Image 1 (cartoon, rainbow, N blue to C red):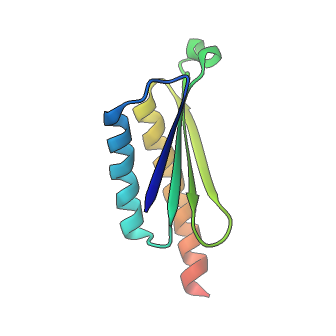
Image 2: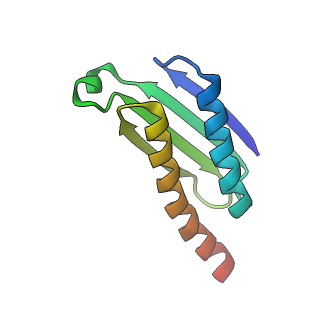
Image 3: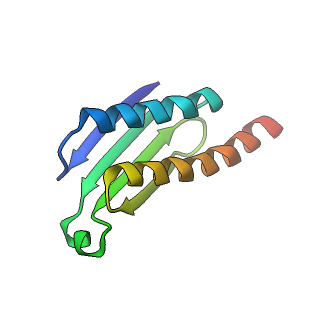
Length: 101
């Protein structure tokens, strides 16, 4: 599986990239129909005052429509964890549709 990273107004981080890759690889073991993933990390200055200045978005390619999830949080790692959690829910639904029909 190919993982593509994009950083908008945020410093690129090897640690963050490796954590995202590690978590995505775990998902791919469970959901092998995912082919490619795009990971977006953003720092939004207007939301920093509210404690939600960091955004993580992940788009997954596979059979059917693209899956997308994003979350806002006070740091990028927490945003990544919430986004992965949201994607698991979507992937469970997609897996049920693909393999039960």
